[in-house]
Length: 90
Image 1 (spheres, rainbow, N blue to C red):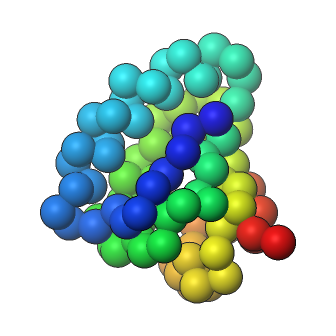
Image 2: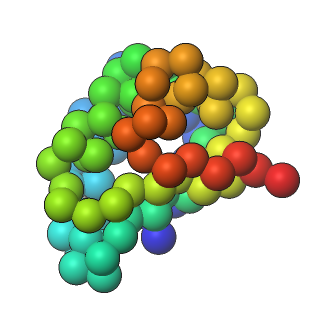
């Protein structure tokens, strides 16, 4: 499981992308990638791009769990809920 924290925006999207690339190979070998968004409170279009690129490059299912309602709405409006499985926070 990969924890997403605080925010993903134009200021840190490249760093998040690089970090994910380093972690993803290990996670993909397990057969699935799970992004835990419990501590993520903001995502910009740059952050959405990082998530989309991740989904396009891995050969296994990607899901995002514990997604706040505001972020879920953004993922849904941009069509990312059709690309990855998204579970809302309780």
